[in-house]
Length: 521
Image (tube, rainbow, N blue to C red; front, side, top):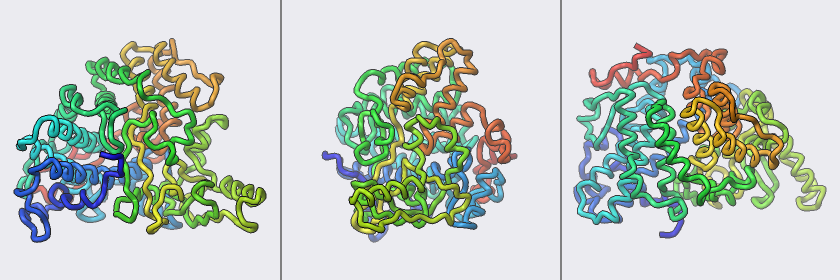
């Protein structure tokens, strides 16, 4: 199989079987679809089912990124002037069980039963159940089952970090079963996720260097497992998680030499990349819409794709100056994380002066953006190099770097410190690798070896904020390091807001099948 951007009409052909709304579950044999009874017979059928699961990753997780960024201290509401008021209830922790996501109707970004991330769980469960019942040879079914179980664990990971108690769907459910499933405790969901990422499951996945782009490798599953263990603070499992991460260090994967190039097309699936979500573009309906959402408003850029030309977007999740000031001026991650639009205008002027653009060419952008301070998102800005000829303004096909090697190094450093209750020599080595790449020298290292555990963790927390800005990590790191009140108290955060309430509308629909989370009862 060639690399391809895997998500095409093939996914749509089966999507309604595994990712439908409640009413769709009742149609066993819709007139325009292949019956589920007749489907899932061949390897090709199963592969289409897998594409349906991947489609859910593409469409559901970007919402988690956008809202979790608002919850953290990474961004403000953004959008056009006046638009930000619609998201202040998230940014200012003003939500309750009766005015959270459910107020937008039946279907919300995180707290959903058969939409949102649970839609992904349903699609994964359908495929897993069909694989379990199939007569396909193990060399075909085992790797596909392992990949589907990775995705199920991934969906549950974000649900579990967002909600205190969530329905535990271990198998595919029909419409009449949706509200009768057991609501799992923290421990039960944790154990369920780890069962999906058990060593005997992970071994069926390919190694990173032999993985088709857009698909899951062993290293991605091991990294997700380590993240889950750390979030649950399961000290008894720290050593096994560290062993998994150490097995990846010094092998195929390396840090990309230039942090800034990681986010361009040439940086996709480089040896730092562990798992990326790909988008097909080409007006296929598989576009990375998050780029359009995050990009600055009213941009007109005369530069070509080769010259770094940008497209405009909605200006969501405005970058505040308080974030920009976190980086040292010598840290290359600043330029690789933040766009300063005045700098882009100067770059265009320089190209005009050099005769590489026509005289009079100007970079134009709008300041009519909620809480705008002149900054934008570098990592996932709409770029001319990653858009299709069809509908180029909003048809982006750059991939989403979900897991990368830098996370292996920093999580390994954290685990080593937690196990040994102090800053360690190994942690120092791994932290040095991150900072040496960031500053392109060895003169900006931060001493962690010999520090107390508290001091060491504070250093690693700050480093993660610099390394993983805009990578859907900050909110969850703030919760994991217990920094909520310290960093977000002025916004209204209290420990009650560590998890979302379950929408009262969901509880009402469940007819007693759901109970409110303990913190919100």
